Length: 111
Image (tube, rainbow, N blue to C red; front, side, top):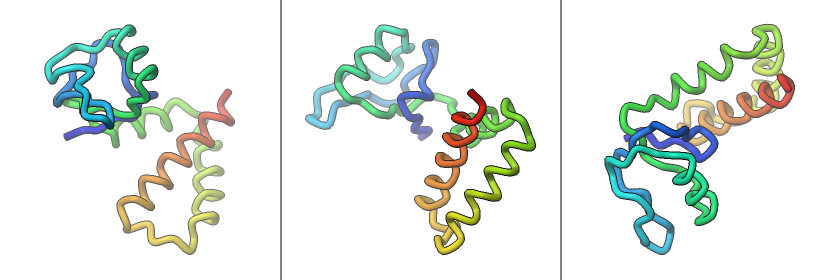
């Protein structure tokens, strides 16, 4: 299972499992290849994530950071580590929050 956030989804990706709204309504069935229209439907219905075949969230994270200036990434990683110094980074949720925060701040400074 590789759950990707809405902003990580791209046309051409294939759903590994049904994409369902919180109400239980199935928006798209597993096996569907995503299009721009599907992504618009997801936004309209408030679907924030989807299970994608063959996706590697860790690889996507590393690709985003690799596209940025390495000096900026290291500077922001150090600043983020300071902000998280009381948090238990071995906890999966905390580690994910750290990774997404770092990604966001690097992307914001990259623009």
